[in-house]
Length: 175
Image (cartoon, rainbow, N blue to C red):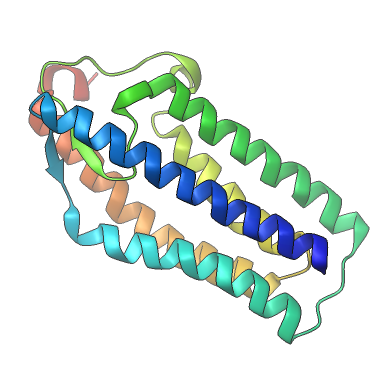
C-alpha cells in the first residue's frame, strides 16, 4: 500500500503544479482582456478532485483493499496515459490552458494536438484518471462515486465552456 500512497501523493503534487500553471495562465489571460465564466462550479470541482485523492487513500487503508495485478497494472497504465494526455493538453493550449473557464476575445479556437480529435480532451483525461486511480488498488467505491459525481460536474462544466465560447467566439463555436 505504500507505493500506492506515493502514487496518490504524486498525483496530488501534480495537481498543485497544475494550479501553479493555471494561476500564471489566468494572469496572462486577464492581462489580455480575458473574461471568466462559471465561477460557481469551480469550488465544487476543487472539492471533488481533492476528495478523489483523499478517498483513494481512505478506501485502500481503511478497508484494507488488495492489489490485484490483473486490475492494478492496467489501471496504472491508464493513470499514466491520462497524465500524459492532460499535459499534452496543457502544452498545446500554452498560456490559454486553465483550470477555470477564462476566454480571451479574438483568439481562435485551438485545433492542434489532441484538440484535432476531441473538443474537450482534458476531460477525457479527467474521466479516465477518475476511475483508474482508485482501481489501481481496488478502490471501487471511490471509482464509482467519483465517476457519478464527476459526470454531473462535467456536464455543468462543459455547458459552461460551450456557452462561454459561443458568447465570445460565436462564429467559431458553431463550427
